[in-house]
Amino acid sequence: MAFETRENEGALFRNDKGNNPKRPDYRGEIKLGGQLYKVSAWINEMKSKPGEKYMALKLEPKDAAPVAPTPAPADPQAGRADDPLPF
Image (tube, rainbow, N blue to C red; front, side, top):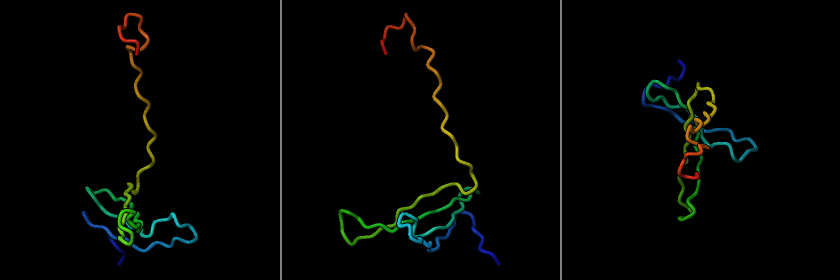
């Protein structure tokens, strides 16, 4: 039987970092609101407390395509001669 991620649950597995120290130490997935998310985790050491370790996490939608940022709408007031503010 294959591993199945249930709602509001997830799992992390040790990641093979190869020769790239920037790769996460652990990878996995979690299911929230019916959406699967990729989870990456790095084991870091606190700068303020040497020897104290913590896990930094990153979540990304698993099946979503990257979304390009939408440009801001043009300001209809910009550049009008009767505008009392110069900016």
